[in-house]
Length: 310
Ligand SMILES: Cc1cc2nc3c(=O)[nH]c(=O)nc-3n(C[C@H](O)[C@H](O)[C@H](O)COP(=O)(O)OP(=O)(O)OC[C@H]3O[C@@H](n4cnc5c(N)ncnc54)[C@H](O)[C@@H]3O)c2cc1C
Image (cartoon, rainbow, N blue to C red; front, side, top):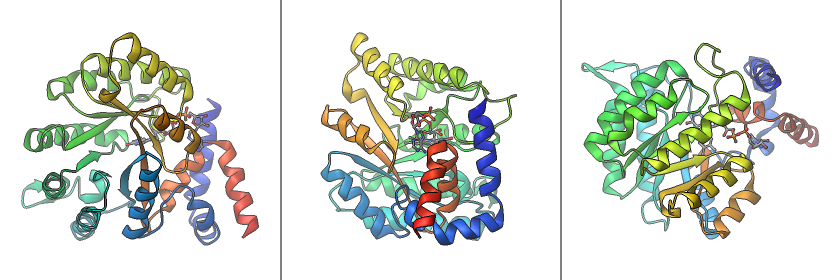
């Protein structure tokens, strides 16, 4: 309950325009811990850096409130530019996209623009041997995202496109079951949005229990699972579950956010697990940054200290 109140308070303050102005000006130094710069080149350099430590990258161009077809097409072009720039740089091409950023919900020529642009991006990714993950956003988008995921797996295959389920949503267990026929590559997360108690579990212990259940069910069904969490007790439990059920390390990986629990990312990689860091970049970093701050009280102090240092 405290978690919820704290998260809501931080996000409410962060969404205030004058706070945004102040933080944007003062906190870029701090934000760089969580965001790999504003350009494609800085993002690629961050992946190369992690690659040297045995950690893979998952690139994410940040962008929110894309509300016109022109902005959505421009955003898709920037993702295509990223894929092209990443070709031949010595690491596997892997990126995440939010369908809302490329036009989901906007109809152009009788088709959802998010789907049209996702196809363009996937065509290029497939040609480069890359992988694209469709991030999961707030709950009104789950139905359309899963429907579009189903269409895209049919066209490009489960080794080119994956998506995400959020354990805080009551519906996710049934969603996972319903996707099983696709043998989907799924990332399991707890969920990052402020959701009403009618759709999402308000109690953290329930969200954690649902998380374990989703991962175990997905692994037992023989599918590839991206265990995306910084929760050490869950990570330990997943390792034990995999050993107990004879699930090989090649059937799952651990994913964490860039700049968070770097020690844990490194130690898992050293143990021989596939570890992938989610690397956000781009000029539109503020919304992402405030969500990371809202996740943990200690991060607010970290920001304030950074701002005082100038
Ligand atoms: C690779 C990846 C992809 C994601 N994709 C999505 C997505 O598509 N849709 C979506 O809704 N959510 C996504 N998320 C966010 C996710 O839903 C959670 O909000 C976030 O991961 C925090 O939950 P946790 O699993 O780490 O567990 P928690 O129980 O929140 O935290 C576990 C431990 O990690 C530490 N920790 C957690 N967050 C931070 C932080 N910001 N700074 C420092 N320490 C921290 C905590 O202090 C605690 O000790 C993603 C997360 C990851 C790692």
